[in-house]
Length: 238
Image 1 (tube, rainbow, N blue to C red):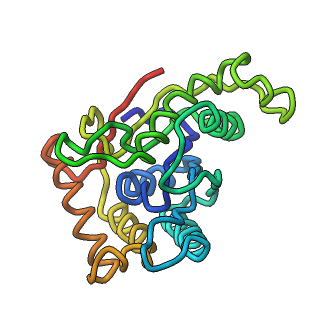
Image 2 (image 1 turned 60 degrees about the vertical axis):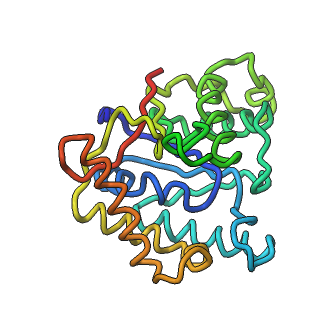
């Protein structure tokens, strides 16, 4: 992965998306002094069957903020799109482009936007919509004549400084970030902060669940990238 950058913005659909795919790399980057912000399209309010959306939104927002803190991220923003029924289109692209103009990242991170996970499991509509919109918004943010109201009404001047777009969780990884034991432990702690969500999925303790899941994904990446623990990304240059 490229290392000559200072600011990144991660754009995903739900609380926990980054923790399932990128947190160990984020931990490494923040330890190196890089600035990373999180932007979530929803509060994950439709993600826990036994908790009504209003309560789930409060719980999952709090879990996401604690999760981000575990890997050194202090800026977490939510766009208020509806969980489960995010609409891909200009409104979503506009919201993401506005955030890109505010944060002015060199690296844009998002989550698997492909139709499937490795050709065997169908991806969710929210992941597909937000991932594709984020990749499109990288260009929108730098074009003065797309969403001109951002500059006119909100004072958000175009930002064309994104140099790379990195997709976590992609079935087609091209690059990887080697991570150490400390990065992995922080990633496990970060995913384990999503306690209510994990307990709704599994009878296992959140930390045990997180360690096993992340260990398996890093092992897969290691087999593809030199045998060392890693977080894999599909990288698109701009």
